[in-house]
Length: 349
Image 1 (tube, one colour):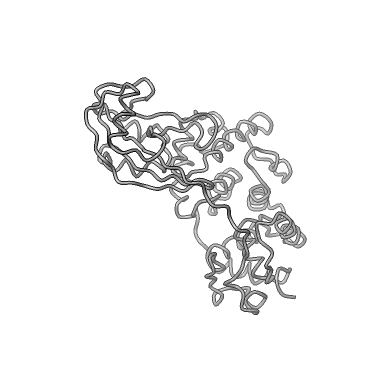
Image 2 (cartoon, rainbow, N blue to C red):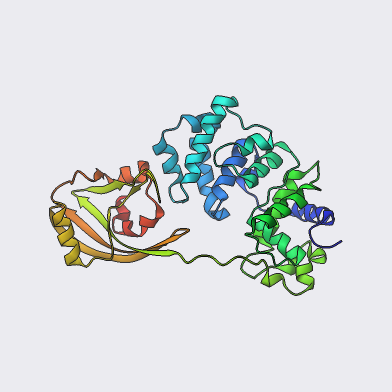
């Protein structure tokens, strides 16, 4: 039998055993470490996560430490990873775990699924890898592998397709090595059955089972539903200095980048003269203003096109919080959207 079937288990596990990436969360797969790594890896490349994971574990080595941490601590540890609702849900879940489960992740798929920020994939990963529970962990990598194995042109974003794929893998998860099989599928998708039409079929242990390969369609799969165009927003970002201090503003508690610190900005692409008038209207006493290099940042549904100015003030407007560059580096979580404008003070950070 070809495609997604029990026949893939022996060759896939054999391939995984012969060599896979040495990742810090794999060498010591405790429930907490698996949980943190899986949340960090959502929407983020493995190589980018390594450093974040090690710093997190040094600062917050267990669930109780996370539950008791100040928001500024865990937000700063997450700075640059994006999708900040993930880290807020980590903290919320840690509090629940301390209140209801003695500070431990439960060895139960349904209970894991009930925790803030934990969906079917993450619950499956924790349950199978940390506790050996035979449940699947189906992410984008696994859906792509399944679509190619089956030569299936159903969009992998289709909810029914995702459900059917989980059910098929669940039917024959090996009771003795469910975590290894899930990780092998993830590893295959990340290193061999690559996205964007470039699978390395010659290196694949499942080539003999792959209907997509045999029909010449592996590079055309998977099919995805068309994405909606992102909304474009033009912003004028201000790197504000008063003496040696940098001016920051905290974003509203709801919406995009909720509650994070930011460099202040104005709507639209303003010319130097328009910016001067706007700041004068706010009561800012401008000493000097220099243009900065434009930048762009892409979020899931919106794209910021930003121009910027380096601003020196004679006063400290009440709307801003002024901090030293070392304090900004150490204690204030600043989204990566603004990093391009910090280059001019990089030596001070």
